[in-house]
Length: 203
Image 1: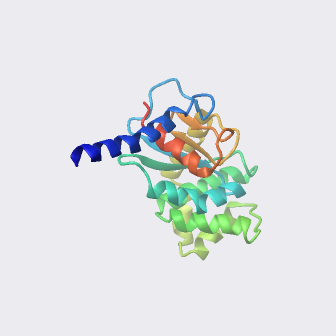
Image 2: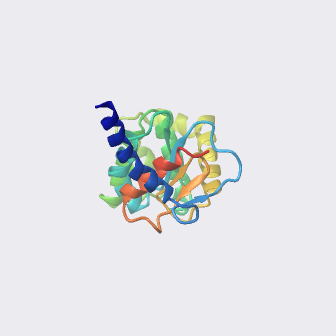
Image 3: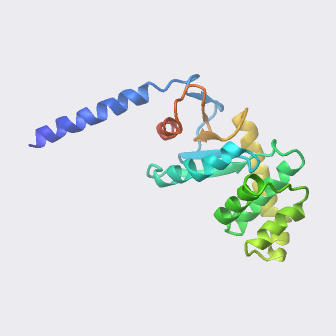
């Protein structure tokens, strides 16, 4: 009985190993950093509130990533500044403020909905501030966080990570600070996530 179970397990694992072996550098992923990988395995998403595909990705794929993260793997998000002209950096600031105030999910949903569902046009930081207030955050708390060292530091970190990732568009996934998942050769978002999970095992 034990032998039969081992054989069945081997048959199950073999196709998975073969599938992983099919993921090729330069086709399914690109090495963007020749240095060492991050100390702990991580999957980092790069997105913009102005990107409609990012909105769809946030509603479907991001919850899947969080729910199925391999043990010991961290999920991070980075807002990019290169979409939205002068409001690009302000949206990155908004994301960092939401993180510092522990209202990430609430504000992420609110900003995506305001831009893509309600077609709201943002022209200043105050427009973003009003979204925070409408979602229960005190205006003074927003102001304090928006001008804080912690938010400035997170914005700088996200900008640096974006530059290191050598992105041509979003949404995008970079694994272990070293491997960027390529979308050109994949057939579905499920495959995108499978590749990302596989890359977490690489150093």
